[in-house]
Length: 79
Image 1 (cartoon, rainbow, N blue to C red):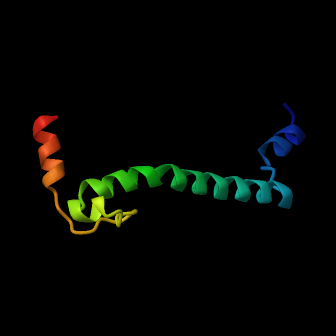
Image 2 (cartoon, rainbow, N blue to C red):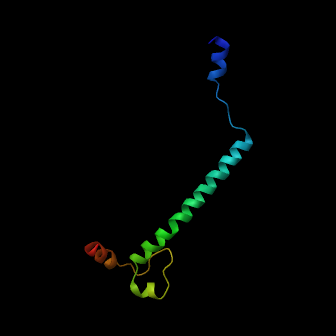
Image 3 (cartoon, helix red, strand yellow):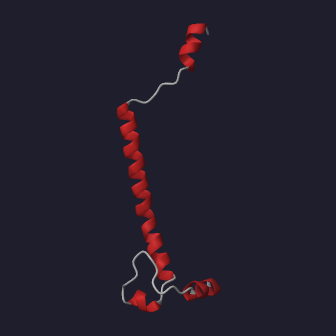
């Protein structure tokens, strides 16, 4: 390999604006998809540590209400 080829091979090629835009859109899409995939897990976990009255009334969405760990302790003993 001569000196001219070494100089060309060592240069890094930067991304142009369209590649950066596509990468940014892909990162945003994957972040939103990841968040969407975690919501059902958060919903079940919040119901597991919420008070029974709030769960049966349908008042628990993504954050626990009336925090109780009795359900988690019961499931870990029987589980």
